[in-house]
Image 1 (cartoon, rainbow, N blue to C red):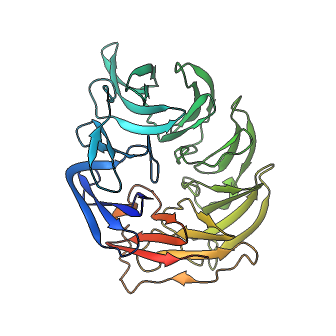
Image 2 (cartoon, rainbow, N blue to C red):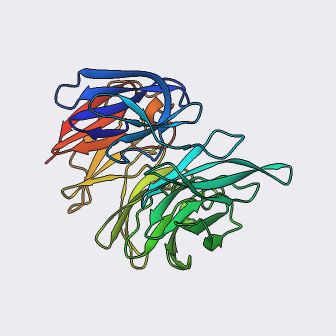
Image 3 (cartoon, helix red, strand yellow):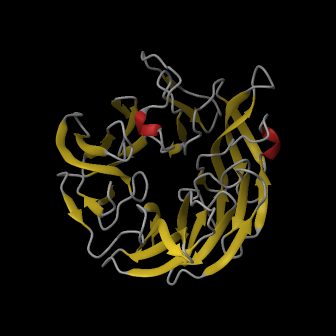
Amino acid sequence: MQAVRDGVVVVSVGDDKDARTALGLDARTGKVVWRQKRELSFPATGQGDVVQGEIPYMDRNGPLYALNASKGGLTRFPGELRAPKLSRPTPVTTGGGILCLQGGVEHGGLLVTALAGYRIRDGKRLWLHRTAHSEETASGTVVGDLVLYSTSTAVVALRRTDGRERWRMTSDEKALLVGPLRSGAFADGRVISSGSERRCLDTATGKVLWRFGRDRVPYPDGQPFYGSPVVSGDTLYVVGIGKGYFDPGEASTDLLALRVSDGRLLWSYNTHSTVKLGPQPYLHNGVLYVDTGTIGQPLFAVDLRTHRPPWTLRSGAEDDGRLPQNLSDGRTALVSEGRRLFVSYGTEVLALPVR
């Protein structure tokens, strides 16, 4: 499931994430209102994002299209919106009127990864930034005049207008920064990186302001904070894998509330289970909804006043330990419109009332 727009829920369907198509469901009745036959990858800029009023999708061979949610029509973006040469582009982020793609370029006889910035208005390439040969971009975000992207070893800030590097925060710790940064919550000039711990960075300088959670994981190479947080006021909410609730040697899943200003843990709620991916929670009217990435118990809610769940959505489907198709890339399956919350798991989409 990708977005809700103009009363239509847009859903990706198919077994291959690089060869899927899309459906449009009536948000009131759940009936299929259109079906797109062209094979597409996941939306180029992330779940729920829109560019110029449309949802960006990538053709499996590279071109970028705008998908009209209400009618399902595709319009190819103007200009050459492909990553430079040799490899299929990977979308990184969008914002400030530009779209960033990662691809491969030839440099000194070698194929190296690179980031390219395109102007959405006309598809013109504004800049090209070559990364280290071994780096693979996880995702990014646009904050003011900066494009921030994360790799397995660093968080890098580029100037949005010309792609020049402004700062780089590196680490030798394994799997420290592999988590999504594109949808990482930021507030007051701060961005939160993911991985084996949470790091709060100053967006202007890259300075680490605080860190949290390295000691919470019961195994050295784990990634307890792969998903993205959500921020409300001075509180950051994130799903993380911690030490076992019943057995300290096992992993469990916690919903954590941290203070944005200093990273202090305010409270936590143990789910008594293991959320598969630790996706970004969804906050609505004082209730935090968490997509578990499992089929048997796809969603639970936590009241922020009591720090306890008012309810948990359970399914009669058998959980075989595999991720639902729509969750295989770590994208949350929750989208909302008005007083309805749409939940996707397995091959089903549910519409739930929220107050």
